[in-house]
Image 1: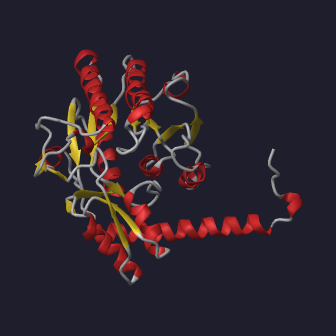
Image 2: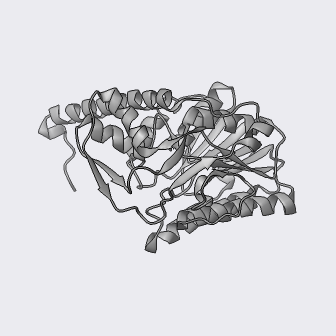
Image 3: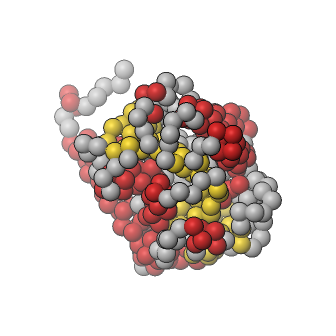
Length: 333
């Protein structure tokens, strides 16, 4: 298949793009390299696939670009591009969340509704549930506690509308606390790897007892790939890791890799953060042959390894820059 992957240079997008290419698909990847985090990490994310003969990178903004540039001839869409971050979605920045999470989704649905797509997979989030205790299932009343969650839920509704009114083969997957290699630097485990490795205090918002259902990125990729090949449409499915534990328990695993405990600074819980997210995966198990199965200790070991390889590569690049003669260094304009 010829598959459009939006947000292809990001954490999840680059992992999924790489897997699709290995399976023999053609991937059209679009990313605007938003300044939310460094361009250099996104470029490193793409290194394994950038020269692949069946990969084409389009650097552009999905909110404004002529979409025909990336949708012509496609068979499926994996829509991952979004403005991330629960904590940053308050205040004036909300407009960016509306544009990148809601309006972009509407543009893609509208422009592809006349195509005979095999599947339109939309990446939603456990943030749509809000503060609900216990296992979260897809039939519950949804009460997002952050503007980010509101935009992700609104985009889910758009997918449902286009499925019912235009018979589009949409499928919304609600991801729960995805982690693993290539994780964004603003995400918890990436931050914790950095702090523990440099013996810096860990900053924890709240008391550290909040529960998350951590889901390894390769397991998420498995589900997305299967979704592209099955006939399931018009549904919303939880994609959770089955490894629910407290933040402090997860930190203890990382401390074990380093060999000593870390200093911790506890700050007030931030607006929009919830106490618990645990996925009920009964629906996932009903419709999919696979479910997330990577243990947290195995998944964190892979992220820890990747983090240090990534850090070593950055240090080597900086050393090369520092060794350049002054005449070869880029002078400020």
